[in-house]
Image (tube, rainbow, N blue to C red):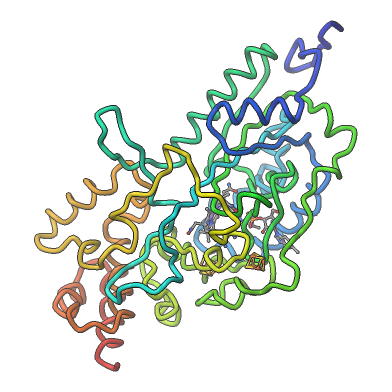
Length: 390
Ligand code: B12
Ligand code: SF4
Ligand code: SF4
């Protein structure tokens, strides 16, 4: 075996680099469905950095200011992994599927049913046999730690940082570079066998990659969208402004989860019954068809039945406001839905009530139309007007 080389900052470096198949098998052992690895900086980094810069410059990030963070020399921190992580030589990107045998948001449903995004239905059964909400951020981070531990057994000391969603990296750019799939016209990462109902986790390391150095181009999965435009045609708020480009400020996922306060009146009708996130552009995608995409067997990302097509009254948690807030915490502690906040979810429910065409919601909307919270008040007043004009 050759002796380890010496790196000026990291000290003794392992004698060999990461191998794709080895990484994939360790990631699967840690609980992921798939994984890829790419050396950094990767071959498409310049192109993706430019796309990201353009996207930010066009104001597409809305109030998600964390995406716009700049380094001391004014570069967008997320545009290149080397900006925040000078030591990073490879990105391991892991995929965890959450496809379930439940209906889709685009299937016919009761007119009083809301829609929570499929990824947020997640749960696991605990030791006592009780179903508990689970949050992919925690679930996948734990798996990244397990993967890192296994790599340390083989490679000894190296620098590493694991991220699920919240790190300063564009995960889908790293995922395509690592050969996990292609970017669909709906901007989602589509795995050729697993579709796009999948979550990503990234482990950056200071380890080199062996095969990627030889032929990085061979990792690229070709774009298989072809002439299809189903996602663009189905998006009710026209957030997909052209193929592969999204204006997040119009995306229902952004409006219902990330955006606080008042929602613009012209977007509320298009929001339909989506109260947390949106699955429409994935639900219409042929790469997610039930025939083609396997149902996920991931035991920590199984659907909570009560979150599939939930009744709007159940979501509103009616009655005493203090009790309702406590009920929100009880249902959604440990679940991604918590991110919307009690008042945010209620604002979204008010909009869905307005879009339902059902008069039975009028008493609650009347009450919320006087709420102190401006986002809820505006939504309820809009909903009352919509119901009275039907
Ligand atoms: C901000 C954010 C959002 C925003 C903006 C989404 C967006 N399209 O940019 C909002 C709130 C709207 C959102 C929604 C959703 N999100 Co989100 N989000 C993020 C986050 C934190 C950053 C994304 C980002 O940097 N966007 C900026 C744009 C430029 O980057 P991007 O779209 O990711 O970049 C790729 C493409 O746009 C492409 N591209 C850009 N221009 C062009 C031009 C051409 C010609 C081509 C071919 C490609 C191309 O290049 C990039 C990489 O290849 C990531 C986590 C992370 N740290 O990366 C999760 C993440 C992207 N979200 C995720 C999920 C699950 C969702 C939702 C499905 C949730 C839901 N059901 O409501 C929706 C999907 C909506 C959609 N159609 O994309 C997953 C995606 C998994 C997947 N299979 O793709 C991620 C990776 C989180 C995770 N760890 O799993 N999200
Ligand atoms: S998630 Fe919904 S609103 Fe956002 S782009 Fe897809 S279909 Fe449009
Ligand atoms: S719906 Fe069609 S165009 Fe959109 S991502 Fe899927 S295959 Fe591509």
